Length: 350
Ligand code: ADP
Ligand code: TRP
Image 1: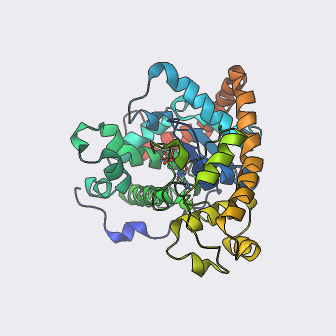
Image 2 (image 1 turned 180 degrees about the vertical axis):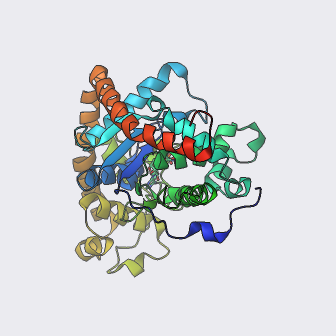
Image 3 (image 1 turned 90 degrees about the vertical axis):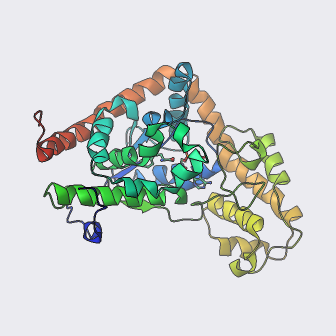
């Protein structure tokens, strides 16, 4: 079979298992406000509603070069960020992807389910590879296939992520549907849903309202890092690009004002309110008045997170204990899925 699967594969799933939340972040640099509002804050909220699995994506990280001597430390930093933003290891399952070999095992099978045509459409690969895709690792190309395995090895149904991951989740659903179809196992895998709702789904750079806030932006002033101290956070907010006009009465008035909209959106997300409520409070005021309020709010929310991360990282053995315990609990769910998959595929070892 070399053709992309026809449309009937993407119909509703007959999956009847329990709801499960799964998400992860790569250990490839300092986390920032976009990661926090787009992803981490949702993990902490969801853990109390649905069984939640949150991992550190170290297999994904090596799709681009990582210093072997530093990788473990980078994993611990993301784990510390999870804990500092409210994930409770007694409630959620927190682990490193490389500690659960079933992710990679299922990814191989999915590499044989996904079609080249599907992967050729992935915009994140095109953005990351740029003009020289022949020099990129094959892993970077099949990155979204491993991501599908991350989700489906737990038969997860909900995936809290930022807006930029929507396309990867569509691919995940296509892979699940085609697997269920090809191996005559209706409803074996669920068709997971990306949870991207909320004002934090796409936080933009503080220097350019048309670019996503990102770890890879060369300008540190473009983002607020989780580990920035209070002075740095205030300075970055004060230096953020804006326009000379006052804030409008309604969200319609933010049309064509990308930087203004971004700062209002950040305020709303940090305060747990809506753009409309922020505008109701600040309409008519200029950024000279709004920015100090935003800076205070950002320091109040982010300051304690950075401090808690530093405290946790002083005790790496405790982080390793939490990750080890999480890996055991994760494997208890992942191993039976892979055993069933091996049977369905007809492997000798199945
Ligand atoms: P980055 O793009 O900075 O490298 P990652 O790709 O590691 O960040 O993203 C980790 C999580 O944070 C993902 O769920 C992603 O969708 C989310 N995320 C990243 N940047 C943003 C942003 N600017 N706004 C909202 N969510 C974001
Ligand atoms: N691709 C995600 C990112 O760049 C990280 C990730 C890897 C992920 N596997 C996942 C997110 C599974 C959600 C579910 O942020």
